[in-house]
Image 1 (spheres, rainbow, N blue to C red):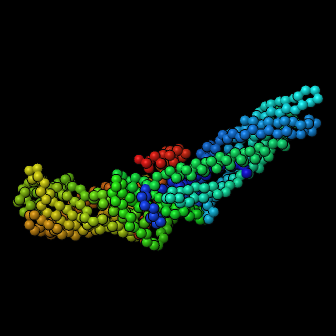
Image 2 (cartoon, rainbow, N blue to C red; image 1 turned 90 degrees about the vertical axis):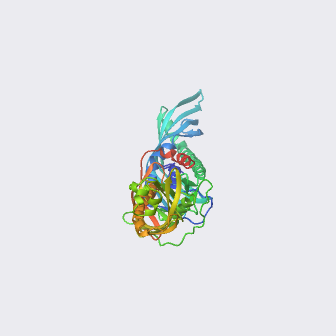
Image 3 (cartoon, helix red, strand yellow; image 1 turned 90 degrees about the horizontal axis):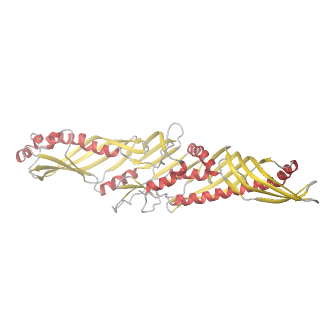
Length: 501
């Protein structure tokens, strides 16, 4: 076995790889995944290249146990040689690649180098008196190669990482002595070359195994939800083993919104068969597919939490917030309550359902608007108008958030009840159009502009993202850039802390 430039890359590699694919908290483990994350060969290569320098620097120093041996040297006899303070100081980067397939994720590195230091000491007896000497030496290891095969499996909704196979090989070792007799140099090289190589291979292999075990433990501790706000969280439990094929990895996560603070969460969603949606243009590093039910689970959570109601007491056309503004629309309102203030109490009456079609999102919003009169400090409900609003929207990317906006397609209305007699709905229609265009939809779009987080690590940003809406799915195709904001080896505990807030 041997050493390479990529020796500790697997641990860091899977920190990023696993967390590229995290979305929410699951209170109920489901076999259906509503968000899938596909990491292409380009994405795997990006992760490997990014982590190479960090992986190499984290590997060293490695201390190796002392080696002692009695060697028979011509013209000298038996010599007791001890090598101590053996330390791998640095590792040089060779070539490497990563691939995936049925056996798991394979990481191969070759052409690596390492610099080592050690102390030497020898002693032997002559017929007159014992002779000994000591000094230091530097060692250059060349032609190192390593191959690791790692497995990823779903274990109770989290990723489990295992080391399935590994092999390390050292090709050549060159020793430079600081002091010592000429005969001793060749004797040391002949006697210890294989032992030094074996010690290097064993020490590095042990460090790798320990790192994989620690990383697996860390992956098991990653929370299973991403908080969105005080109302909802996104369920990010894995629902099946990752699929490795053709130099890519495909993850499936639950992906539905769940409620916080004890609010009942929807659990009746079932994934229908959808025709696959493909990215267009040049290959991207990552593809995130979101089923239509992801968005409908969000509207369900917010509707159940009574988050879809508000009182309008400010608007661009302030005239509608005084009965004087209704004088020619609903005359009896002004006659009974002249020059009184008005609030518009708007509430969504049933869960909005979103339909993702080609390059757009359609929805129908059923809502009630109660006209409240503010009369001498008393709030008087005078009438309720039911609205059916048909809207069409689009989905966008803002940094690492999925956002959206809607525009009015058409609306219908009817009088639900009135304490001031019948209303001329033809006259009311213009006022309702103003309310929808200047209050209702802007308020909705203000919240949608905040969006919800896609499964991307802190310190990384989506770049040149493309969004495709089709077949009841939203596909995000994107490259990823590292902003350098966080140390890569501190990302996992940072991520865990963020998700635990």
